[in-house]
Image 1 (spheres, rainbow, N blue to C red):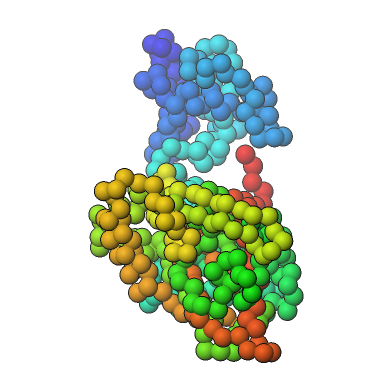
Image 2 (image 1 turned 60 degrees about the vertical axis):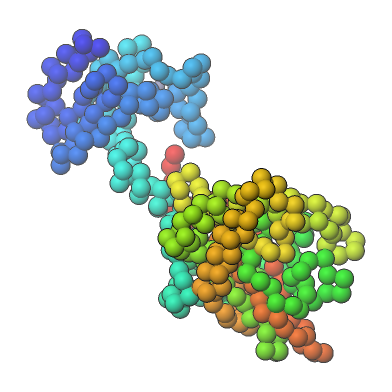
Length: 406
Ligand SMILES: [Zn+2]
């Protein structure tokens, strides 16, 4: 390595005159000192792993094609130079392999905190804007159904609202039972569940689900009993109840979790660690296949970056079997009670009209409904469908970055 560093330092003077300086430091890193003084720093192993030459990288499929038996740990840089005309870094490795890296490509992959943060926020997932009852009016976004169907820019804004505020309302949808299907198709693909590809929410004789009654529906998320829980819920109001009830209730579950964390940190810890058994046993209607869905997960789930990623809450689907040690049970109930207390205090109420499509993040939003009364000639009727976040984020990225390269 010493000989290599001597070789590099002999070039420093020349490079410095050209304002951008590239060098190997401490054997593990290649450093690029930019004109404005920013220092970009890349592990040699990462550069070799991500060599963009035709032998190592298949551009058409954006795939690494080099086959490392144990990873590219043992090949070191022999020579590194910056080519100011081509704005690229030229590397010759000790095994005589050659790599070139475009400076712009390298900048986008800088390991510095601000570059990483920008990528995660702009490309990976936009940060959720948590909101409480008093902020509901400012976070409430409305879009015209036809604009979402016809204009990509509006589709993008709508999907961003779902990712950031967690919900949005589409106005002016036609009186057509296929509206939710059209919206799911506009995003990508519908999610099929044990309740079909679309489900009708109306009071039904022999209801197979508590939601199909006229009783109040407490704040909940759908399908906590699925490992792959439905991402968004698309609820199209075909007929709204003329009775006093039938209003939607909504609370930002991430905000509820965040408040619990601040106000009652011990209860927060319990709700994010103690797994609850969520269950759904039955059949949807008389002619469907029977199901027995079961998933164990805490009420509050965080992702690898420590951000809220999923809330599980559904009183009607919480199993009497609670598969945790006895001593965890009572403290869990106390913590759960605090969570529900905050949720109820932060819940807003509004009533959709016929032609409204209420769409929300089912991993985040606690939602419910007030009791209502059907009358002859006025039967409340909603149609719902689900789409997964993998499909939504993918669509959002293609809309935001139509010319994305690897
Ligand atoms: Zn290569």
